[in-house]
Length: 374
Image (cartoon, rainbow, N blue to C red; front, side, top):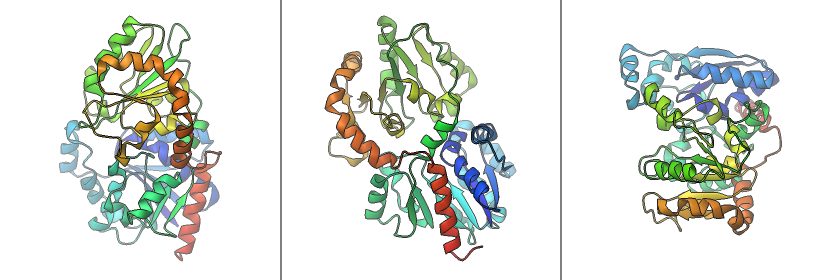
């Protein structure tokens, strides 16, 4: 049996899939190969393998035509994932299965990968509609953390009985294996707020709220602030710009435009209050229920929209002028939301006991053997 783990997007997605590859290698004699698009991926794959105690799996950069290479140099245009998959379709079609952590890999069927089974494990547990799009039905097996996502995918015909499994959160499992980074560089131990803005232009709170937030914490140093937006917000920007943002860190503010700690849940574990908009990372934070504040920067009518179900887990702020008051009030108001947080987190994250990656590996083994493969 030969299985390709396909990391077609940015390296942060390793934290949702690499541990499954390691557990498969431990349990079988199968050939497991990591194929990657982002050149930063091997660093993260090895970091996870070290935390797991090995094995260290073969890594192969995906081949890129001269055209693909040229387009990828224009970082703001993206990763050109379909083009990269097309450049590698002959090799990928030789595997028995291809495992991916983002649904773009559904294009492999259209591009000519007729032989492998396609296995998908989403890299998040959020509520937004883009996580429930028709191409998910292309996959032969879908691994999901919790029943909330499964119920919605079943109701929309994206998965079918016998074609999915509930495993719990592989990212939580991975984070538990990775040694925490050194202590956060704050002068004083204070309550810590994590600001996690998303990258989506029509939904992100970054452009409207980050400057008022930095000003608020500068004027009121009673709390620490970690500014750690979705890594893709700065992924395609210059190192000079990222450095300018890092330089805005102060005694009680840490600005991180993209580091290992921004993708391995270190900040979520270290924080007391979550402030964000639409990122599914809120559910990672709520593995331990804590106060949340959500930022509605675009005047969205969200209350009856299932894509914003998580905004019912804390106060929602529409006006930056009310931001600091909402953050200060969040601990006292947490009692209003705690029970709902526990229910929603359980439905989103599923089984949070150790071993999600092992459960996912066993599901893959059972599926592949059930397909008549050795």
